Length: 242
Image (cartoon, rainbow, N blue to C red; front, side):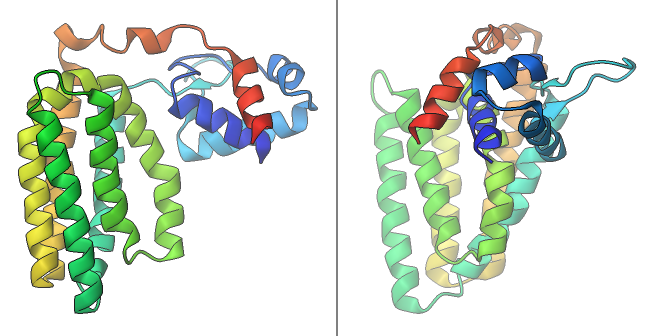
């Protein structure tokens, strides 16, 4: 489990770049374990979509999944489905808890609007505020199974957002805040169907912008920094520190 979490974190945080080959012998040395936990971790990461094996190569080594539009679209769709279900549940909370959630979401969305209107908005701050909005909405009423599913899926979607944030956030912030308003209105009204639709609409529009950015030739240089070699020793140190 330690090796799995360290590798997953390294992939999600960009310290293991897309297309990086995962070599069992090297990883075993760097993590100071046998090849068995390395192999087990890689197999689990393959099952979850973090790692792929190139087709057509008999002895190909597994590698970190590349950033491609079809994968981004699928991940965003899955996140929308699960978070939409959570929002529908939140819309059915008791009135006092639901209105507390609405007040929290309004504060986060207003902070996002304010940051977006700044002369030099912080992309990290905008991304964090958006993540906090969805985290609060989802965790208000989601059960442990739903949260476990999102724990596998959402970090992979956020890997795309981290790479393409500079391209997307300046264009998306006003629309995203307006879409958040629709989520808040549905929750305030206690309308589960409207809450689900509003979340799905928010992710649907974001996914469309993201896949367009990935597929646009002018933007293909954007992920380049994430493709450089990453230090697995750093991943090990961070894992050990935990």
